[in-house]
Image (cartoon, rainbow, N blue to C red; front, side, top):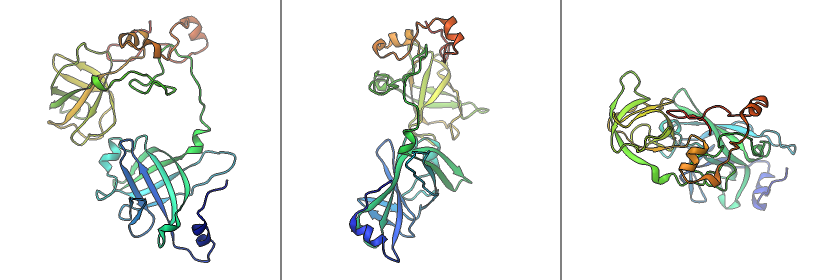
Length: 304
C-alpha cells in the first residue's frame, strides 16, 4: 500500500541515520485534542502539543492489500498534566474518539509528516492504575464489517441520533433532559442507587437514561435506568458507575425509547421507525428473527 511522503521527509528517511519519532493524536467527540509522542521531549506540531510526560509505546502496526483486520495498541502512562486521566477513561471520555499516528522528523518539523495509520479508538483498559491501553482500530477494519439492515420487530435506531445514519432516529432528545442533584446514596450499593432533588419525569417513562455532570462520574457516558420512582425521587441504574456516587453530584435524566411502535408514535417519530413490527410472531420465531420478544424498560411492554 503506497503512502504519501513529503519529499523532504522521504529524503531524510533515506539517510543512514534519522531523527524521527511517532506522534499519536486523539480527537475526542467533544472536540478536545490530546497528543502523545514517543520522543523523550515535548513536540509541538500543527498547533498540537504532543506530551512526552504522558508518552506512549505502540505495538506493531501492520497493513496489507487484503484489508485484513488492522489494529494496534498504544501503551501510555496516566498523568494529570497535559494528558488523559483515569477518571476520563472510566467515565467514557475516549468513547468514539478518533486517532492518527504520524511520523515526523523532530529536529526539523517543517519536513511535514507521514501518516502511518488512523482510525477509531476501541476498548480502553487501565493497567495497574498507572497506564492506559487504548485499542487503535484502523479505518480499513471498518471495510470488513457487514453493512446493511437487520429485520427486527423492534426499532434498531439509537434514540436521539441523526436520522441520516443507518441506525439514525431523527428525534431531538436534548430538550428532554432534566437536571437533578444527588441527595442520598444507598449505602450498600453506592454505585447504582440514589435519591435526588429536582424535577420528576412526568409522565413516568418505561425506560430512561442518566448522565453525570459533576463529581467523579462526570462524563459523556449514558447509564440505563433499571427502576425509577417519581414519588421517592429514587433512581436505580442497570450497571454500576465507575466511581461511587456522592451526595451533591449533579446529573441529568431523561426518558429513553423502548423501541416499540407505540413509543415511537408517542414521540411523533413514526416515519423514522426502523423496525418491522408486522412480522408474524409465529414466523419470526421459526426463522429466529432477532428481538421478537418484549421491549426492554422499567415496566416492559410488548411490541404492538
